[in-house]
Amino acid sequence: MGTLNAVRSGSLLTLTLDNPGKANALDFDILRELERQIEAVELDAGVRVVLLRGTPGGTFSSGADVRQWAPLKPHQFARDWIDYGNRIFDRFERLRCPTVAAVEGVCFGGGLELALCADLRVAASGAVFRFPEVGIGAIPGWQGGPRLARLAGRGRALEAVLTMCALDAQRASDWGVVNAVWQPERFEDALASLLRRLACVSPHAAALAKEAVLWGAEPGEFHAAAGAEIKGSADAAIGLHAFLTKSKPVF
Image 1 (cartoon, rainbow, N blue to C red):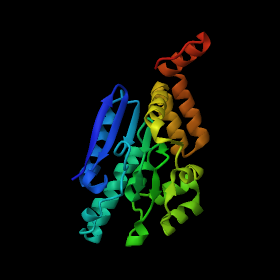
Image 2 (cartoon, rainbow, N blue to C red; image 1 turned 90 degrees about the vertical axis):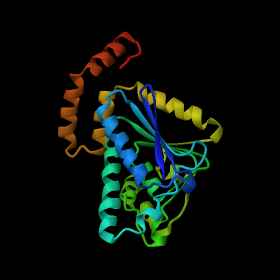
Image 3 (spheres, rainbow, N blue to C red; image 1 turned 45 degrees about the vertical axis):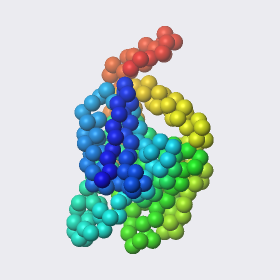
Image 4 (tube, rainbow, N blue to C red; image 1 turned 60 degrees about the vertical axis):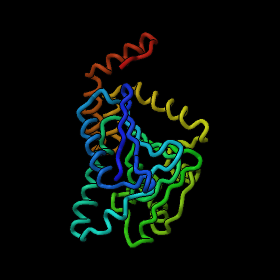
């Protein structure tokens, strides 16, 4: 039985995958707790940044827990595992605040699919990414293929899924899968610096900017409406005053 440990520190919420006997494999308990934490963030404007990580200095996640989904009948598997997981992952991707997945070791299968839902991914130099599903007669069912294609391109996504190739941290960076690669000895400091930067921006503007990048169906119309919305907000007043007075805005 796995769990997802949640720790709040100011405006930062850290969610840590914890299933040590199974290399942090994602199971029903972790999915349910992730859903609960997402619901809490949706209701709490005080959360400015969400950090998702595995064991500090170790495994992110070995993937989905095969022993949980293997006994399911096809219709149960589709409903209770695939559809349920996708609803949760979609909600995580759509959180209004910035999200970061910190990967230091193995990040395979369903674990990689979850990491791909974050806005940013950072990796330690020893991180390894892989989709092994087709080798056991399965697919990345939590939309890992399409999400990877949006980052790395269709050809590379198909290469990763169909050949099950392992991507080291540098190759993942070259493909655009991760935003930064840090050596283990500076990983925590670099991660903390990134999180501080994300926590300082306008939360209202961040939410609209994120929506514009990910879901703005009609870009012209969306940007006009979003621009009007943010221009009339308290955050805009704070930011413009800080710019004109050459001071640091505090949102």
